[in-house]
Amino acid sequence: MISFSISNANAQTENTDSEYSIDISRDATSGLIITDGASYVNGFDTTYTIKGTKFDYDKARDLVVSAIADDFTNSSTSGYVKVEDTSSSSSNATGLANPFASKEQINERIKSVLNSAIDDIFSESGVTFTIGPEMNVIKCTFGDTLDSFECSKPKLEGLSFFNKSNHGANKLTA
Image (cartoon, rainbow, N blue to C red):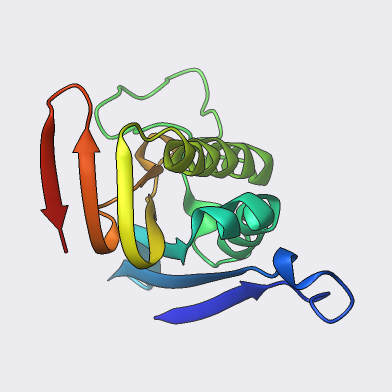
């Protein structure tokens, strides 16, 4: 597992209200098959876990997206990402199209799914009261096809009180 953080490098010269920090960790798994003197990649995925407050995501969004896109496209497995799942399709007798995604396609897919997940942080409805800093977590899993790239926002960390206006019920989560 590899971890890295994004912090405001200009915090000394800027107003202290603009400081931010995002923690990102990466967990990558892959398999290899060795047959008759050749090795083949046998599936892989990379999971990024991103933690920060709404303010942190607001300030560091572009840097988070570009850091993850750069990190993934520079990994050894990015060259094996397929445009689509070809395991169930029939072979083309007249010629073989390149089944692998370009770096540009991978970057665009990462930007799309990650920006959507960050947008979800800001589109929550209801009233939330949180004791301590409200940490928002996004988990992104990038597999061996572009269609398998997804980001989601699991349950909020910390102690929160919700008031969902459409149900009228109060809920306490930890």
